[in-house]
Image (cartoon, rainbow, N blue to C red; front, side, top):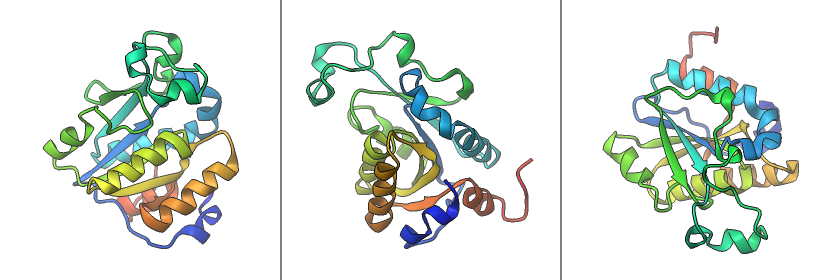
Length: 200
């Protein structure tokens, strides 16, 4: 998604501070591969930019281990869940996480719910999060909103997030830009992190 596609929602402008930022890569798992593939190159570019800026990269992986952790998702999605230990639950191989990357295991839309993510970020002095991944309007949006109410400054990627319907994607961008997050894309992120350089 090009910059022009979200300028109408772009109420506030700010660049992430690499000294206090972390990149959240939400649920880029085999289960979501059809939704994730269209944004994969932009996501990989975002990851490369953040690594160059020494911004830590944190992956989330959504799965369920037993009925006790299904919650409302079982009812809502009529049993179509991601089960731990299955190929669908694994991160997409193209991501190739580094050994130092942290992986958060979650079982609901929010990456903060009973995961220890907030404590992990606070212990490392993180004050800002850059949200990427899938799905824009579910786990990404929920995580972004919750990050905001927990006191983190939120940056939300417009071109490294994806979902099943363009209208849902647009609705999330409009809502988050209004009350929760600064919108960024690969170009703006590169310009903000490396104002005098070009991506190689």
